[in-house]
Length: 89
Image 1 (cartoon, rainbow, N blue to C red):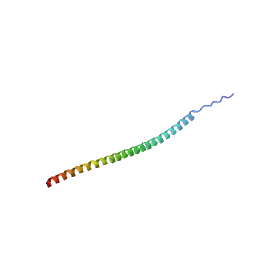
Image 2 (cartoon, rainbow, N blue to C red):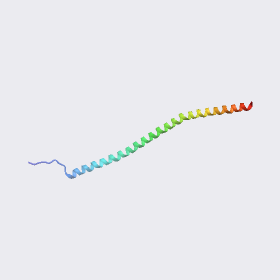
Image 3 (tube, one colour):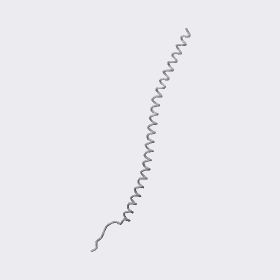
């Protein structure tokens, strides 16, 4: 009777380990690129949000600034008018 051994040789195991290593390194390299692209997309989204917040802040406060300037101009006009009327008497 013959005994048959179904086992792998050392060379076969080393080849399989080498193939797994090559596949793992390829996956890691591709994931690194994907992570960099994801960071870039997030940075662009953050910058867009900051830009929108600045525009919103500016639009809210420019109206307030214009109102304050208008009130100040009206006060100056009133003071000048009163001085003019006082000088006429």
